[in-house]
Image 1 (cartoon, helix red, strand yellow):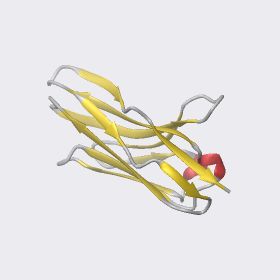
Image 2: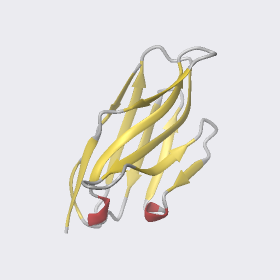
Image 3: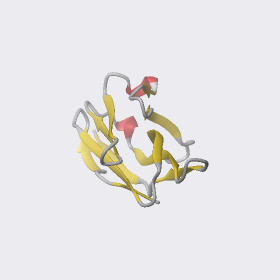
Image 4: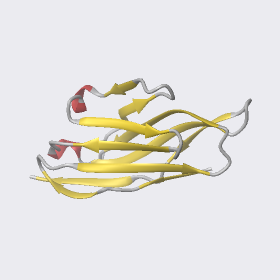
Amino acid sequence: VQLVASGGGLVRARGSLKLPCAASGSIFRINDMGWYRQAPGKQRELVAQITSGGSTNYADSVKGRCTICRDNGKNTVDLQMIRLKTEDAAVHYCNTFIQVSRSYEFEYWGQGTQVTVSS
């Protein structure tokens, strides 16, 4: 299984950015999907999460500014961010829990994509 994240880059404060992530390989079922971020000197933290049924959970710091959505047919999860702040700058990681068979589930991380926000 591979998890490929993209979409990072440099954006001005109050700008927008979309981070797509796609899973591929031997996939039986994808359960929770999410995006995390890690700024220099800080711990990795949850940004947003979405269950297979579509229920979502957001960090308080991004509520109202981020939307997570998934396409179960394409095995993708996207994070749309608006009104970006300098404190949103971090390496963003895609995360999923994938069943490779009916009995086995594993956690996967994407390679990380840098989001830089200029003031």
